[in-house]
Image (tube, rainbow, N blue to C red; front, side):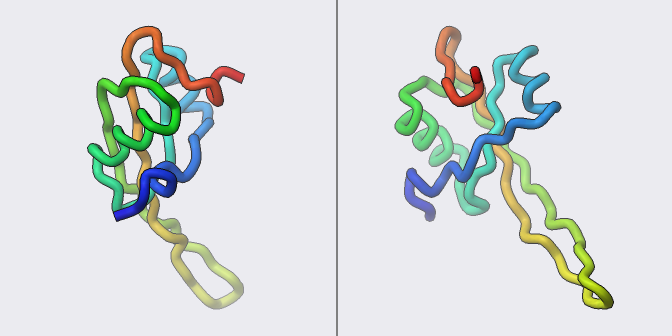
Length: 95
């Protein structure tokens, strides 16, 4: 099980996640593949000092990549969509 500091890998700021933030106030993060919803909730609450009301997760499959005649696979990763209590915000997404 990953530690709280290693649970959240990085925030995902894409066009789709920005639209979700504007419409539904949802934040998107890349998280450790072995992290559970409970550990993701604890990590977000302790790292950013906010109250989490919902966590949704999705496993992203690794994409096939090719170098010459060799075929490989990028590693799989996990995405977490987090909804916060009304009025709470995370500053890294505001800039």
